Amino acid sequence: MRPDKLRFDFNHGARMTAEEIRDVEDRVNDWIKAARPVRAIEMDRTEAERLGAMALFGEKYGDWVRVVEVTDVSRELCGGTHVANTAEVGIFAILSEGSSASNVRRIEAVTGPAAIDLFRERSARLERTGDLLGSPEDPEAGARRLKGRVAELESLEAEQEASAAGDRAEQLIAAAEEISGVHVVVGSLGPTADQRAMLETADRVRQKLGAAAVVLGGAAEDKVALVASFSDAAIERGLSAAAIVKQAAAIVGGGGGGRDNVAQAGGRDPEKLDDALRAAREAIANGLDR
Image (cartoon, rainbow, N blue to C red; front, side):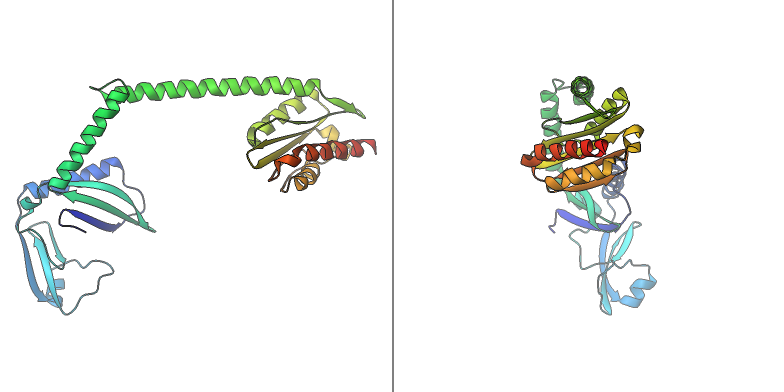
C-alpha cells in the first residue's frame, strides 16, 4: 500500500483476540529490534522452492523469481523490499483486523513514524476518555464505574417495565367481559411492538382469570404486533389462538401463527389495529355463542 503501511491476508477461522494481536506486534517488533539483515536475490523458481521460499497464495510467478530473505525469520518470493535491515522498519503497529473472505482474516499495519503517530493518537484518546470518565489517571476505573452505573440503570428500567406491565395487566383484568363462562380480554397495549413482553402480559392476564381468551395488540412506528393466549377452557369451546390471530393480522396487512393456546403475528398498518382487535373480539364472541 505504502512504504510505511501494509495489508496482509491470512487463513484463520476466527477474529483475532486482543492478546493475539499484541503477540503478533511483540513478535514482529522483536525481529525489528534484532536488526536482522534483509537481502533480495534473483534465482530460478525451482531453486527458490528447494530453498524453502514461501509463495503467496493466489500469486503467479515466472521461471525467474525474486527471493527476499530475512535472516533466521523468513524466505519468500517477493517483488522487492524497502529495507536492507529490519532495524530500518523502526516500529510496527497493527491498525485493524477484520474479515476479507470466508476463513480469511486481514490485518492492516503501519511502521516507523506512522506507527509512532498511531501510538500517540491512542494515548491521547485514552487521556480524553479518562477526562470524560472523571478518572484522568485511571481510565479503567472510570470505565468500571460507568459500566456499573449502566447496569444499575438497566436493572431499574427492567423493574419499572415489570411494574408497568403488572399495572396494565390489572387494568385488562378489570375490563374483562364474560361470554358464556369464558373471560374475554381484547385490548391495545399502546405504542409497543415487543411481542415477547406483550405475550408475557397476555399470559399473566390469562393465568389470573382462569378460563380466558386474551388477545392484545400494539403498534410502534410502522410495525404492528398481535399476541393471543387462550386457556384450555377456551380451547375446549372450539377457540384457537392461532386462527383468531391470523384473522386479525390479515386486517393490518400481516400474518402469523402459533398453536391453539398461544399465537403471535405482525403487521404493517398501525391505523387498522383497532379494526383488527374488534374483529378478534367478534370472532371470539361468535365462537363462544355457538
